[in-house]
Every structure is written in C-alpha cells, then in structure tokens.
Image (cartoon, rainbow, N blue to C red; front, side, top):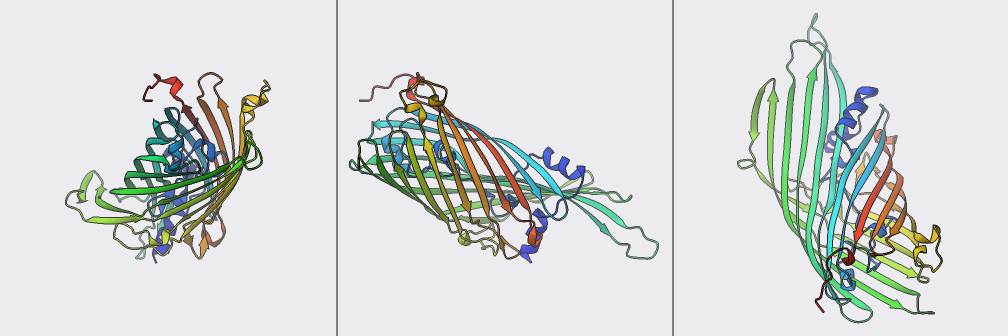
Length: 428
C-alpha cells in the first residue's frame, strides 16, 4: 500500500500544456526526489565532478575538495570555492511528459593551512539531499445518484526542501605517504509538501493542505588518504582514499495546515505537534587514482550507502528503500601544465561516467541512473585561481512498470580562489 501511495505522487503527469506549465512554474527537479528526505547530492569537488566521481583519492593544492577530510592536510594556500548549478529533467511516463528546470547555489567551502602541507582545516556548507518535485493530476468522481453531476477536480502536488551540512574539520599528515582527517557537522533541513485541489464542477470550494517537517542532527566523517609517488619516474604515482560518514540521528518537528475557501486551519503547530526521529544512513566511499605523469590521471570510485536503514519521521523504515551502490570512473588531462603556449594548453580536460544502482525500488524495479560527465578547468595564469565548467548528461528510471524515465542534463559553474586573491598569510 505504501508503494502505491508514493508511486501515485510521482508517476502521474498530466498530458498537455497545463502539466508542463505547472512544472516550470515551480522550478522542479527529479520526480523521484519526492521520496525519503530527497535525492542524494553527490557533488564534492569541481575536479571530481568533471570525471563522474567525488574525488575521494584526488589531492590538489589549488582546488577545494569536500569528499575526504584527510585531503585537507595538503592545503598550501588559503582556498575558497563556490558555485552555481543548473539542472533539467525531461520526465516521461505512460501518461505524458514534463520538463523540470532548477537553478541553485550548490556549495561554499573555505580551506586554510594551519601548518602548510601538514595540517589544514576546512569549513563548508553544502547539500546532502535535495527534493524538488511537482505533479498535476486530473480526476473525475461519477455521480452517486441518478441526475447528479460528475465531479471533476484537479490536484497540484508539489514539494521542496532537503538536508544540508554545515561542516568543519581538519586533515593531518602522518607521514610522507599517509594522512587522516575528521569532520563534524550540523545536518539540518526542512521538507515542505503541499497539495492544491480545485474543482471545475460548480458548488465546490477549493482546498489546500501543507505539511512541513524540520529536522536537525549531528554528523561525523572520518577520512584516510595514502599515496606512493615516484614509482617509475618522478611524476607518476598511485593514491588511495576512503571515507566513512556515520549515521545521523535527527530530531524532527512537523506542522500541518489546511485551507478551505478562505479559512486557514492549523491542524498541527510546529511547537505542539508530534516530534519524530529521522535516521540518515551510513556512507562508505573509496577511490583509487593513478598518475601517469604531470598531465594525465585516471581515477575510479565505489560509493555505498545503506538506505535500507533509513528511518522516516515516524521512526519507521521504508520498503521501497534499498542499499545504494554507485560506481564511477574518469580521467583528466591537465594540458595547462605543459610548457607550450596555445589555446589547447591553457585548459584542463576531464571526462567520466558513473552508474548508480539506486536507493529506490518501486514496483519491483530498482531506479538506476547512468550519467556521462565532462568538464573544463580554466586556470588563471597569474593568481592560481580557476574556473571549472562541468557538464552531465544521462538517464534515470524507466517508463515500464508504471514508472517515470528522466533524461538529465546539468551544468555546474565553480569558482576556485586561492590565497593570492586575498591578503598574504604569515603563519609560518
């Protein structure tokens, strides 16, 4: 029954212009983000995003990286980064289609060296999950008695929210080859869902109801990084990274309001309403990077999240949530490090692919995602700062089994600023 209820919220799109207009007006994202606390957001670094990975085993002194606290040990300059993202989801099912667009500021991070290339700290704000969806459905109720009219009505179901992390931590170099890191965070967010009901049959008043759940908890991440450089030459090597994000037990408050005609009724106030507990799953992320020389690298990652342990506001697990496995691999060619001077050698080139087995299983079908990624790094020849432009294109879900298939297109613009853009520091 729970599967059928949730499926009806995300899988039925009204055909025609009215459905598309409703989606665009609400700035929607993935239809599948209606479930749980939203869809996981995997962005952790602009360098990794262009290769289809998070960057858990990629150390770079000129680019910030959220994926692994141990990487912060290598901070040499003060670094700051922030960015914008645009996403488009072309969603289709058996009933019709809709195009959903969304623009967002996706993260901010500051890395500071306490002892250069040995001890570095990071402060960041970034999304953990995102939920943005809407659906317009039309219904008819046949007359209950002879001579009565058929009741026609339309529902506009929508929601937005998700969870964010405000995180601070450090990375420390144990030896020439090994480093560890730790980060503590406050995980918080608000999930809002609303339904508007309008009647085309005379004699019925419009109605609306809204549910808002606010959550707060505390998270912990541990990281390890190892490298062995100079295997066959001074510029090659291999690196390994692993992080563990511990489960987050979150307290929650719920508020429910209804509107009938012009009358607002508070069914549950946030202060007097029930309190619940959400449980975010544990995450394990591992990666391996091979450096062929100063210009070329190849990296691969495996990410696992045990979403089967996720608990909703009522403290219950959900049958449609399954453990998640994501695989990613990509490469980078840093042509800007070459001595030649040309348009080609002023940029860095990245590409990769990722396969996500998914954390949702609806109608006995796992919701899988295949994404192709590509990126350009545009470094400043003077300051060491850079701009990264990343693209992704792929597919999620299926139109079989009464589900939704999404074609995904995304662009992310990230600004990486180095210490040379600020006042010079003199800590050493």
